Length: 182
Image (tube, rainbow, N blue to C red):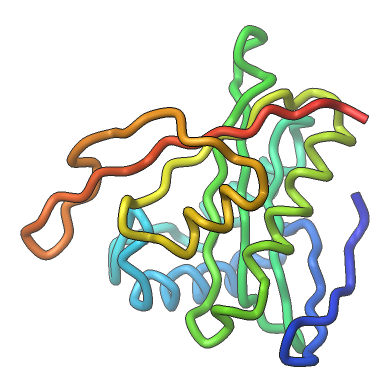
């Protein structure tokens, strides 16, 4: 898919595009910032230990497969959100995969997560390989859970004690969306 230019609720313009290896340094900065802003991720501050070379390789690798996507959202050249999806590596599971999504806190509530997710779903339908999109969401992330339900995802199960934050366990809710190709 091509890049998209979208107007946000606050009037700002966001560009959605697939990440490239040259985004590696900015992605590392973005991830380190978002790690300190949210307890809804699988990692916290200082836990994203990827070198610049490793991140370049990761981003380049995402360009290679039909069943994977690394999408970033930018405002004025700054990465403000991303969504990654990776399908299975073997033929029997290549049609399904899981995504992760994050947005800088100062941009929460502007519909960025919805735009990233809409792009992912549209991309999955167009590539024709993906038949199921899965996710896991921390049980108390109500805003995300409501968005996922609004986008058609259904709750499929619960993984107990998946997160351990500040001496407390949290479950994650497994959700999925069936994809019909165009």
